[in-house]
Length: 541
Image (cartoon, rainbow, N blue to C red; front, side, top):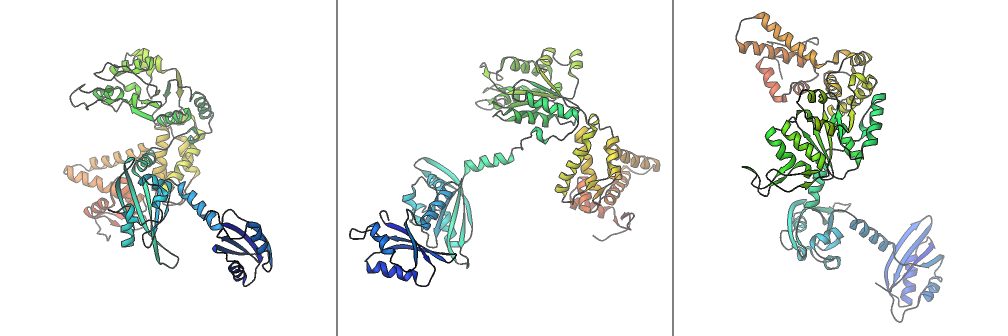
């Protein structure tokens, strides 16, 4: 109670301290409101609250009275008892949480509620605390269900409060003490709007930075130094490089380093049908064409806001949209299809291509004015064959990733395998290296990856062609028999190259059940260790 006097008394620990204090207070007709005892290092610390009344002793008189207690070491006045400090701390902690929290005792009386829950319910702390939960939420109460059934209860709810309608997801759980006795329940409240924002944040791809690029070669180091310098300029950047060098990842890193608040929106110009390019990029107004949305639709340039538009494979963009892109880059304005309003846009533009745009300009397949407009700052990503010293770093990093993904112990790449990687020409660049390391990780039965596990895609194709040649040499027979024979050879080769049926199914792009059916169809079975799988010998699965 406000106005009560609170003290901390320190004694050498002994039996009867609490009794002595109670007897002394009783002799003075003083009422003890609360008392806490803490024993430590041979001392007893007593925190006590005395009810203050008009005829009671004042503070100085009480301190003098406490001094008469046997073996007392010190006495001081307190503003708050330890229990009050703990309660204030827990209240501050709960109020700082992003979720709403309400707890009740076994009778259903509310004993804890934080600010978030108060705001969600549209009520104040004083109007909720120490009331029965049925008074706050008389219908369809999640906490009441949890109390009655003594099991976890979760569901979506909608409330109409003084500030409007609120939708939230509530999850209630029973509370048991250390002996397993039921003592109450707690409800966690999550605003559905905040849940949606959290889901969107989790589903959004992680940001890529230049720190994610592995490379010790001078070419990559100089490139990243240059890219960091131009990242926050807002100027158009043209990224060129062969397929598989990581042009989109580089563009994402540029966007991240720029600090622009808007989103990164990638657009594959080669994948968009010509009829849809303009409506996707620039949007349209209501009634612009049959099937158009009512009220129209903003284009991706508008949606990007203060972010970045990434025009990938811009060399494959048809001539018509090229002219409109040029106008957007020059004027910073877009006009929706069927509309007249000029809409300002502020998105930064990054383009990428694996084609020689200068040759395309000479062949009249790419606009010359657009070519010079997008080539303000050019970033040329070197192919992997020109940065051989980075192969070891990249290969080991990819292997660590696939080991975690496949649940394998840490594998190592042998010197013969590494030599094979260094001597390869890498037409598919880093993407091909990543695929090759994944293939090697899957095919290797041991922790050591040897040269035989490093198989470029053309070797796999050569094997397929070799099987086709064998079929051709055999000649005759129906197409169905030829296909069956080829499928059998592929199945046996894959099964013999992998440690389990499940991994073989993954390598073939089949489900585990589908591969088992094919094994049964062609009567394949386990054989000796050299050729584990054989044909025409019934097996047991």
